[in-house]
Length: 315
Image (cartoon, rainbow, N blue to C red):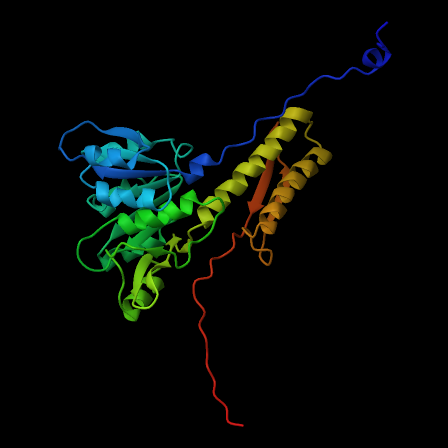
């Protein structure tokens, strides 16, 4: 006879948690170009084979940089008029997080028509008058020095950033492409002070990424911040779905604990600075069925330079 006492007295029911979030979109890059033939309808194409690029755009050699940097695919957005772009990208930050505008598109038009984009935006310019754009939130402006304005090296940098398994700031990675490199210390200093990303050329050490930032912050900051937010959302939403809690102090404390646990995990990975404020609080509100939270994170700042003072003494 089957032993039914335990199953009768204490039956178990399966409670499903939520599926974990996917972070794949944070590692995807969309590139916006103008159609080679004017008045051609706008379209969005996933390009998984770089050999396809030549048939899609006259800028194939430049877009190759993203693949050479390590990406296995890009999203190619082709428009005849930049005003077509908002309708193509609205609400699609969850498909790709980084949006790069080709330099053939007017930089002010690109910025204006992507103003509501919630991810990272970028382009390249050879005009230092555009340097103030480097301070726009989550906007990465690459500076190009010299003739033959090209997006190859900026896209190569993003290829390396987005294809890596961990978030790293890509300090001084190398490139074999010679276009757009800063060749004097004065130019490097000017670009750095303006927080414009750039590549430099060094006779002894080769062609190196001299700086990489977005909105004046480390290039990894918007990606880390988004990953923290998604992880906290998942942990807290799973708690609500599994436990079906009431709005009481113990529930609010548990929501805060789950958030702080995520914060500590990101501190251990080196993504958040343990010496700065990283906190999460959850409090009750007058609004029914709702609590309020406050999240403060301090992503770690990339280390690019060491300013050294040298002293000489006589014994």
